[in-house]
Each structure stands twice: as structure tokens, then as C-alpha cells.
Length: 87
Image (cartoon, one colour):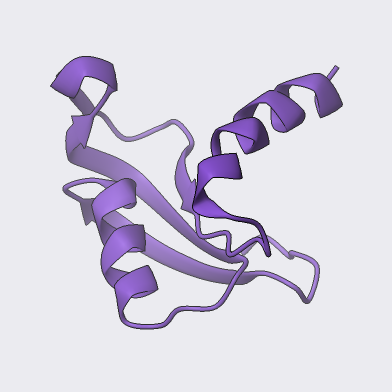
């Protein structure tokens, strides 16, 4: 079982349609910032432009719920910030 910093809450599922759809459902139900959905397999993942894919067991499939104190219009900047920070 992975150990994460206390700010994160880990939700583990063997198989999901999509970690993104599970995270969205949890977020709409009030899940906290830092909730991480991890699945060992996805059966109906979705990508850009609505592309579908299946993700077989054996890789890392995660979605993270973030609730930043920013305006929704600023959300796209998070991807840029994460990319720059990863370098």
C-alpha cells in the first residue's frame, strides 16, 4: 500500500470505467482537495477529442481532485505550471 503525505486521500479500485469519471462523481459529492483515484485497470478511458481507450492492468491510472482557490478561468494554467515544475 503506497504511503502519501497527509494532505492526500487515496481511493483504490481494481477496475473502473475511468478514473476521471470516478473522481468527478466523488468531487460532485464533496470529496476533498487531494483525493486521488487510482485504478489498476480502466475499461472506458477518454482522451482528447473524445477518443476512447482501454487501459489494461499493469500501469498507473490516476485522477486527482484539486480545489484551488482560483477562478475557473485560471484552471488551464495548472497544466502549464505542472509541466514546468516537473522539469
